[in-house]
Amino acid sequence: MSPHTGPPRRASPLRAFRTIFWSFLGIRKRADTQEDFAGITPVQIILAGVIGALIFVTTLIVLVRLIVR
Image 1: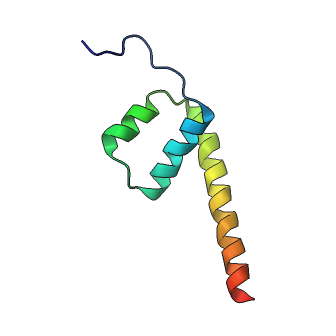
Image 2: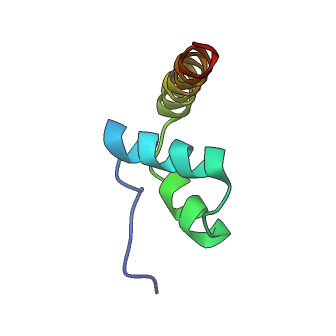
């Protein structure tokens, strides 16, 4: 019997963002990722992904503008 019985707890927005961040990098163990996804709702995944993508694109734009100057 596993120590966790019942439905998984809902993840905090910070945990959802952290999970998506590691997914972007692609360097997290599959077991850890599956464990994190167990408590994350689809809405949290979508929001964290969109926010992460916006931060990534904004960072790239800022870096390119700094280098071009």
